[in-house]
Amino acid sequence: MASVQGKRPILVVDDEPEMLFSLKSLLRPGYEVYTAGSGAEGIRILQEHAVHLVMTDQRMPEMTGVEFLSRIKCEHPHAIRLIFTGYADIRAVIDAINQGNVFRYVTKPWDPEDLLAALREAGERYDQLAQHHKLLAELQAYEARREQFSEELLAGRLGTLTPDGAEEARRLLHSGTELLVRLNKTLAAALNIGCP
Image 1 (cartoon, rainbow, N blue to C red):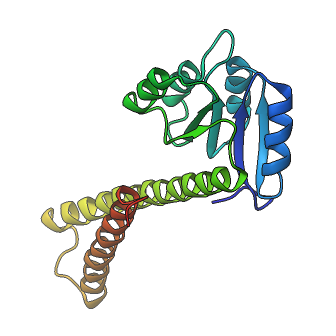
Image 2: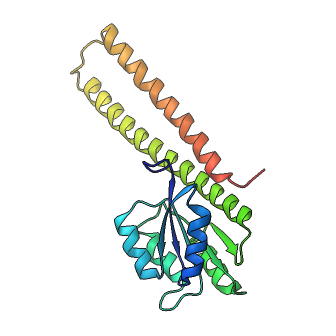
């Protein structure tokens, strides 16, 4: 589910330019990195680019990380959100988790390997949720086809089912069953992320 360049798009929001530079250097090999020095700038970037992961500092002037994540949650619900801070701001982290705005909390200063592992896990979550949404769309399309087929059958427009009609009915039922099985597997995988 990476971008055209083969890299997963990520937005990093922090008011410290040296932190943005450091994170961009670390992430550039594996990610398409967008950076913003404020929550307002981050919102503008999200309006212009499709982003899979959003990572923000908590302590920023004008808009905290929690406020930023709360503002983007409805307009960009599929973006997986992470928050980091160097302060013992437990209340903000608890608020972010309780409001469903954050997937993971990362401490500052961060260990590069730990940060990359958290981002890989967040990327896996994004991919699983994207697959789940794709399967839901397929299931809705299947349901519409099944409904139309049923209406035509009940209205007598199909007449007696020909061998081709019977085969179409069999394929319709089989594809619906396959979709349901795949949907259940992706949902189970999405719910079990991080579980042994």
